[in-house]
Amino acid sequence: MADWLELHGLTADGCVKLLADQCPGPAIRAMQPTAISFTGAELWDMIARVLAADLPELAPAIEKVRATTVSEFAPDKAKFLRPFTIHDIGGGRIYVSCPCDGTTADILRLAHEYGHAIQITASKMHSMLPVLRELCAYVRESLIAQSAAWETRHRTRPQMDLIRSSIYRDLGPLSAKLKESLADNDVQYDYDWNYPIARRLALNLLATRQQNTLAAQFLGEVPLSALTT
Picture 1 (spheres, helix red, strand yellow):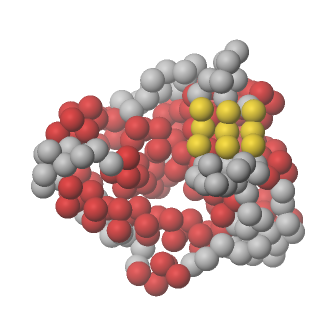
Picture 2 (picture 1 turned 90 degrees about the horizontal axis):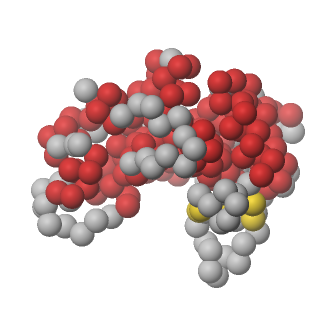
């Protein structure tokens, strides 16, 4: 824990204060993905169009990700159950593995990995702290979930219920887990610690919707200290 706090320039008290804001209520827990008729490849292209329109400053990076990323939407789930992004598999190509199951969860999963890929591309492989990496991915999730693009085939936007459920997970159970770990400087590192902080910071950024700040985040130009003070 001590190493993780030092790496990010955070303090235990600062984390607790940051996470003190109210999170969605327990009723959100029951939200489940619903069926959609988009394929993984269709979603990937739609996400690119939505994001380019929403943050035109990053349009070149967004298009490069769409055109050059090596993507796998049906990986062997026995080996690769969770989505992941590899920053360079050779020749500067990004690799994204994201198992799609034909539900609204695909929208958020792909938006999350697209966020990682944009951050890698826009920052030109610039090394980024884990919390900031996840913050970028969460910003993309939220922007995509709020888009009306999905109403083409669905009269509602069920992904909004799903993202509220995801926010509850991060600011509810995972936040409680992080707060418990903060009491023990020697506890073994858990990547899940990054999610509650990243989610709270992403929500704060989106609440102000300062376009230049959002774009700068993906470019690696905004230090974590600027978001937590």
